[in-house]
Length: 632
Ligand code: ATP
Image 1 (cartoon, rainbow, N blue to C red):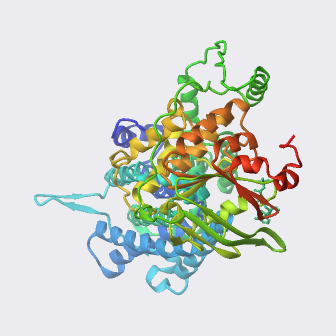
Image 2: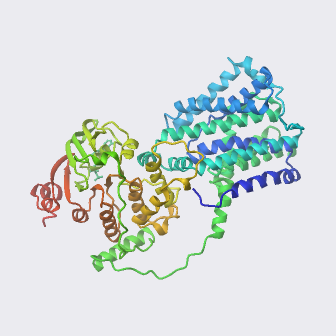
């Protein structure tokens, strides 16, 4: 999602690959080692899309590397198919199809279980290659006699049969691989993959079908592996069975970690270091069998001290060198309307404890409200939301019991209740994050009970979270882009080669949301660098950017200083125009001032419902919830 000039990376890559051919031989790299690096680098480009960009650590890439390579080698050596490149492409397609089938199984689990499934699947492929299919794969001997490629030009034929010409052939395909990968990561699909890596729960909640996107990344990685496997056969003149081993998958992970995950070039840099050192330890230092031990120690040191890999370390150094030095200026404070000097002092103390936040522009009028998206269901005239008999049990504990709840279009409703009253659980059921044990939820006339959180967000119902759920490694603008994309593209679209900038209405929607949550000046700052109050506003902005017709806000004032609360209430009032909102919060004063109607929950049930003044004077509320404090 970076805004650098187009094609700079592509041009530098081409220059680097050409320059390497002239420079690397002088520092001890043989042309064959250079070719091996490029093949590993290409294998790693796909893996980096899966691991570095989507956050899925697979130890099973050898299965696709071996499959692509074996299919290509089988066609070329056993079938006698004459076209090297066509065989590699067929191998790539088979690897991608196999990747799709494996992904359907492996992606049913996440984290360590996903990684373990990929290990197991790769072991199955290794066994199948060695045993039942050894007549086709050559078993432990592999498939010898893979020919080198040729390029018929009509008047002459170029033969890639020398070490340098083969390097040129592999470098060309590495370049194509990088161009395609850059296109993918700069596309809407690439942006969503990064969001899934950072926070899959929120990526689903803002309306993206994360399973389909993960499967896409898995298939792309398998295709890259299959193509690189085909090149491996060409490079070695035979297809080695070792391509299928766990060592291959492990080496790929190690090289990516050394070079830097999430950079696309990390695997190439890692392969350069790894292969150079392994050649150096074996052939120059003659370490014998101990070379692996020494290489292992080097790997541990590199990963421990350069946690973002070599490319990450270079980036950090560059940022450090180019970062403008912050000037110390006396902090000016704006008087806050409606806040006493004592409250202001308290706010200042909270801000000091949490680190400096940029001054809030309290006096500024909020921008015009962003209208909710018009959907076909907007013409429905009944209540926007109707929950009937909603109950949620966790084992013996009843978090919500038989709740009947109706909200009309355009209403600004508040929900209050003591800790543990079941407010968050109620919200989670309404947004279909958890299914109710019994009861029914109807949104804009449609029964949404049993839907998932992505589907209801697409229908126009979403929420902001009690604990911030942001995409931590992305900037503020990129966060809002992820949310707006779900509205503009639907829950899944395979526009892997289109540009984010070309999506009509995207930039406007993001800018408008930025303005609304008062983060325009911080748009290109990474989330990790935001002050807490800004993160809270971004949390609301994420929910808002998908233009919901019903917006639920779970404790939007939680953790804010008095100064920030005033700003947030103002923001909430502004965004409630033209949309229906339900707000849960513990800050009674702010909430009762903000909303038109209040529902009080107690012990998982509706205690009472009414206008703020009715609630303030309700004896049951004072007794049960406030213990008389409000009356006092
Ligand atoms: P708070 O104001 O403190 O956020 P709340 O009103 O939002 O509280 P909930 O978080 O909905 O209350 O919790 C209601 C009850 O349900 C609590 O007793 C809580 O421990 C229980 N509960 C909530 N989620 C779960 C869960 N996933 N598993 C088991 N019990 C749960």
